[in-house]
Length: 203
Figure (cartoon, rainbow, N blue to C red):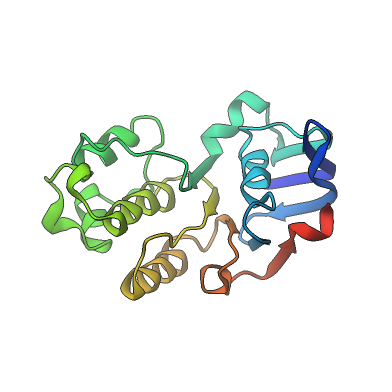
């Protein structure tokens, strides 16, 4: 699975968020998008996810052949601060619900909750979770999805030292064959990435 950007750019009104970006994101590789807060990292990630179209240039998702735009969401999982989880559900209920439209990778929900350290709170409504516990649920629904593309926007938001360690273990153990793109200005969130793209170089 590949994402191919050809001279792509995105602007809002007259302000370019990024432009003249040509790159191929390849399956099994890990990429970081870096830049200051408000520089457009999240916008680029949304373009990669297919939820936002570029203003110039082209984007293609390749799975043996080019994918129709309406099919892209099946191949992408994402964790981001602006994506909400259903807090009236328990973590177990939420993951069961989530897998009805984004199948999991074969790991049982019971095992997922054990792995992310939330088995003790599996039957507690998410609204009673701490912000760090909620972030673990967000990461789990994205990382354990069977989708070949994983997009992570500030993935360690609200996580403590143990949470950072969990995050790195999840990437190492469950994302070896995925195309992983991390949007962050915290090197501890992307220090495993082989390629770093500075969005400020594409203004």
